[in-house]
Length: 592
Image (cartoon, rainbow, N blue to C red):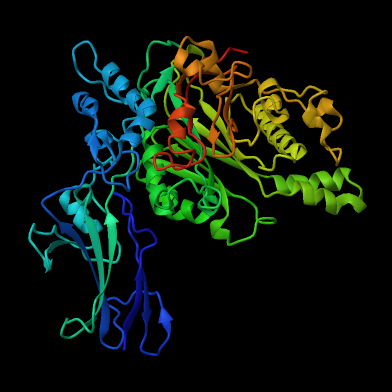
């Protein structure tokens, strides 16, 4: 007969908004073992599996520490209460916890004070994706019926006791295998129950298998990052979708296949899990309200099953280029790539180009490398990296006299350059190959260029110099690494695109807090990648300065605020990179 052998939860720490999906191992009547569901519609020999979720109900609701959400709070910051900050941010588990977090915590007080305008009204956060909730979760769709439907019923549950066990009182909250905790569950323990049921009598057959979780915790909510105007340093304004401006986001979201405890052991396992990270990343990305979104390290199955359908709900059209699989092992579903999204109400898709650096390597070796050295050359150059180039047409006006009746096109390149530090020649060759392709597009059309991505190259490196300066100094130390001779003559390492790094605009304005987060020598952010072993800038948004101007930039983060969790990723930020966002305006075209 049908029986349940084991039930298990990948993480016993439930987080609001993150689906809990138990592992259920069953034995079928033929003695085989399976993890497949046995529903009432498809019973096995007159039996099926019934699932229920319960929440323990007590008179006392436990407060959770805002810094260590798996710990119970023992003290509350009265300054937060006075400043009317979300109450969840005011709790701490120990005095040491509060003391260690104070440098970051006091910024919340300062921001709350500065957010009150002259009339005494609080201003709305530009990226206030966590506003109006104490749990840090956007509950726009979390009405009572919506929660019930999501958790396996067609109507909301009555507020009645459904189970008593000794001194404990349990309320039924879900009737399907998975359950997504809500704000009402915070501070409470959940119980999952799985039992074999007779189809005719609807009575349980044998004992129920149950498992208890830890107390439900709210999803950590970082302070929203503000949009800083670089045309007027004193004004931080909202994105104005009705004007001729548009915004571009670039973000390496950290592929799940790379998010291991071996690499990121300082990040709690529940915060490193994909069910948690995907919801946190989605909230962050959607909250930025960008018109164009360039993501790197998007796993193929996650693009199809999560990012594309979820961002579609928010009005985005999706395009994807998976890394080639000549080097990387594993299923095609877990290979990552570059994904570009754009808002359908702001842009329409004109053309797509896919760049496979492996193909370019093959062409290069066929043309330049002797047959005896081709295998060695390909082993060095073939790294599966790709780029996705998209040409879009704007649906908004540019308000320029010379643009009347003309199509406003924008070309957006999204790439992820090879990671190995010692392969400096490969990085530079990949960037040069991409730029040569973009030059051809620019020559065929009068079109602004945006080059976004994770270039795995720090400011001052040869790839960065080529992008930002249009050429590489022949004496640059990176050129010393060229075993295949692919970088010679060095005069070919040049391009004619007038590219400028968007974030260099922070070096030219009077916004002192942001200036402190920019390297004065390179005019680039001090970091876009922050792990325990490395901190530095690898990500950029370059734009063609002859046709675009930067209006605003998403503020940079300071290292101290991230180090309270050791490094990235963390419970607050779910990638080891930070997102970059720039708002642009198209310049009026000059008559020719």
